[in-house]
Image 1 (cartoon, helix red, strand yellow):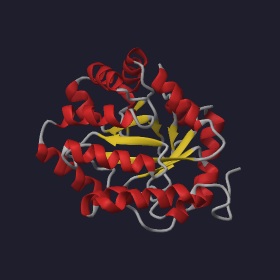
Image 2: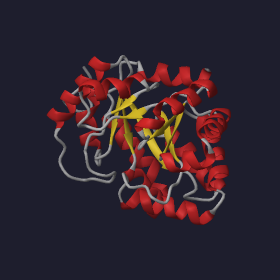
Image 3: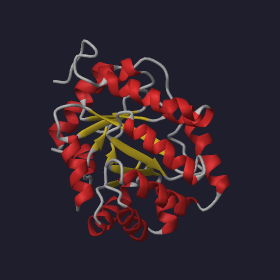
Length: 265
């Protein structure tokens, strides 16, 4: 599938790619399309589009607030599909959500809907182990990849099992805190974990959570194939959308080789 291939090609380039997370439904459709256009032009390599969920327990208050705002607008699935369709026309696009809405709509049905909208992948951040095989089959039949978030404590057979049921990428959180964390990062621990993931699977490794500044993103970039920025962009989109493109551009510049002293290996 072309969209899945475009994601693979992006993540196997030599330079770390910049992904930007945007929750669908935060703004009316015409404004949302404009924001996506501007963020894409600011240096974004891929989009991660969030399907709103009312119990987003792995997310911090900024993204949870954005999801509540989207839910109040209603027609969440239809709005998300339109957002994915527009984003996928700009950059490779992956949907991010939780298992509960996928279960509610039907895994096979939802995988097909997102594939038809142009999604290159769909990542469920809390996919239950006993549903992983079904979800892999659903995405394989529909076309999009099934990236997996891998908890930092995963090791041995657990890590091998998660990796075997993933496609597209393995997601290594830079912090074990919820999204929106602004504290220091244990770069050494993240580097070790990324090495474990690469030993367990040939899939690209992507990181996010806690990359609150361009400088932190630059420190993580040599370890992974892409970084995804979420809360800083969502905060800007919520409070002053006009600032979001410039913020995305500052992260994109930080990932450019030689911008910071650490460069991609």
